[in-house]
Image (cartoon, rainbow, N blue to C red):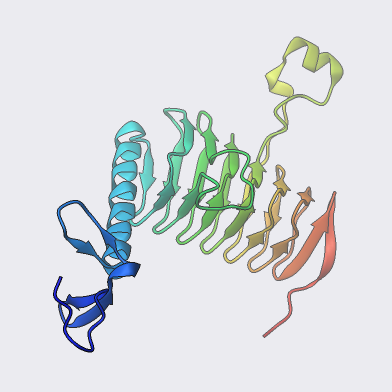
Length: 234
C-alpha cells in the first residue's frame, strides 16, 4: 500500500465521499459496503419480505383483503373461515418477534375469524403479538396502537351455565361485536372483551381488562377497567 503524505491508510474515496475503512464491511470480492448502502439493502430486504408475505397471504386467503405497504416482522398465524370477511388497511404493522419488538412478546400475532365473522382494520394501525378472535364483528380504526400481547375477543368462548358447559352447548355462548375508534392506544397485556366500544383517541392502561364502553378521549385502566382521567388537550 502506498501512503501519500497527509493521508490516512484507513481512508479512501467512495464516489464523492471519504469513508473510514474501519467503519465499513468488506466482502471477499474487495467491494466496500458503506453504512448508507447497508441501510438501503436492509430497507430493500424488508420491502421484499413484506411483499412476499403479503402475496402469500393474499393467495392463501382469497376471502381477505390486505392493503398496500403492510409491514410483517415474521409470518402471523391466521385462521380464517371460508365465509369470513377480513379487510386490513394500508400500512398496517404486525410485529411477531422480539427482534422487532423487544418488550417481551409471548407469541406472534394470531388472528382467527370464524364463519360469517367480520374483521376490519384501518390504515396505519400497529400490533405486536396481538390475539384477535372474531365470531361476530370487530372493527379497529386507523392509527390504532396496540402494545405487546394485547387480546381482543368478541366471545366468551364457553357458556356461563355449568350444565351448558358440560353439554358443550355452543348455542349458549355469548358473543357481541367490538368497535375500537381511530387513534386509540391500548397498553401491553390488555384484554378487550365482547361488546366493548372504545371511543376515538382514548388510552387503555397496560394490563387492563375492558368490560364496558369507553367514551372518546378518556384514559381507563384496571381490572375491570375504570375511568382514570380525561386525555389532556395539547
